[in-house]
Image (tube, rainbow, N blue to C red; front, side, top):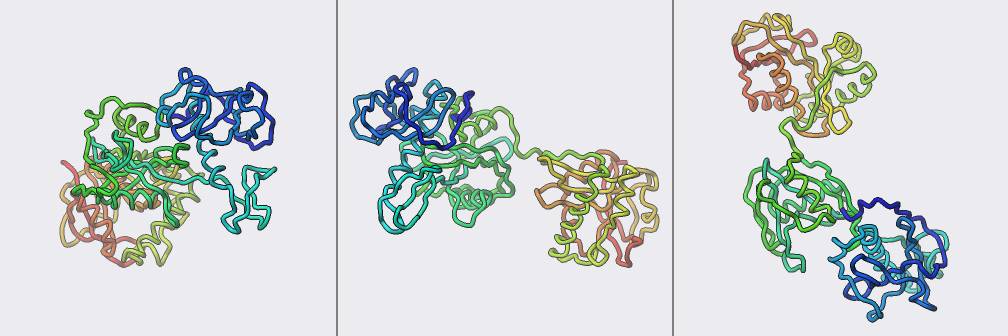
Length: 439
């Protein structure tokens, strides 16, 4: 991307006087004035005698200054879009970043509170009103870039009524009171009429062309018909991974996200990127927080009795599970996503010997999952736990509370069959018994 430069970028504010050879950024209606387009080079301070030049930043060994915008200067011009592929990249990045600051300086000439002329601060990058003291900092507009995916295809679009006619991802500005993830959900529904199921952060990019900070997200959506908002988009359609082909440049976060998907990156693998391993003793406090979250979720979804009254499971029990090597955690993105108990034996759960109103399908060693809980950070944790346990054992038995309709729905979705009723030691409530597996 255009900001991925090898040279150091130093944006610390300072008031400096330019040397005659320091590069100067100056912008006209068509783009940035240059001394050379290829390789990219800018006019020098000596080319602006008597003009007030503002120090901006340093990129590598070059200290950049800003000259007042003017419609007519005795230099050639490189248009805005050409900066995406201009070389050297360090200078293209400087031009795009300077464009952002130039726009801000030109639009902060007068105080928006009292109307007096603003003056540059001597202490920081800010404009200050000498009359009322109003202080204004550089404006950065956060926006999202959205890679909508379904399996092996990604949603691409073309803008309506914009100069850029190439392929694009969905995008939109963050509104007041929204998180970026909220913006993703809203924009996808508004622009193509699809419901977002889950999101995954993909990276960020300062985008001086439009004074933005771009926040990239992939999202997975529910099945449905694309309904294009033609006030925003000319069209939108699914593009298979194998048909994406070459991209016109590598400067933008949009193209970076498309290229990653084209080259095999799967933002939502079947297991959700979850890794399952034995829990460690030092993770006990974090594990207990997961259980607290799960109790709150169960209570909010019609199941306050299963774990709530006794704050089940107790910490001593989980500590013993860890010591015995029976406690497992799911992790992804550097965080605990879930926790559960797993064992495998001919009599892995003695309480399962007495099953009423039915019978287990198989009489053989089985795996058992107890105390499964999600941290509520992402979808698919319960599915990943059960698929992992089934893969270890080949035959899995499990029970759940009659009020736990969420778990019952998950078990049914994964193909488990209800076999009867069992009872557990922690309370008098019956439990529905399920199993799944091959003989």
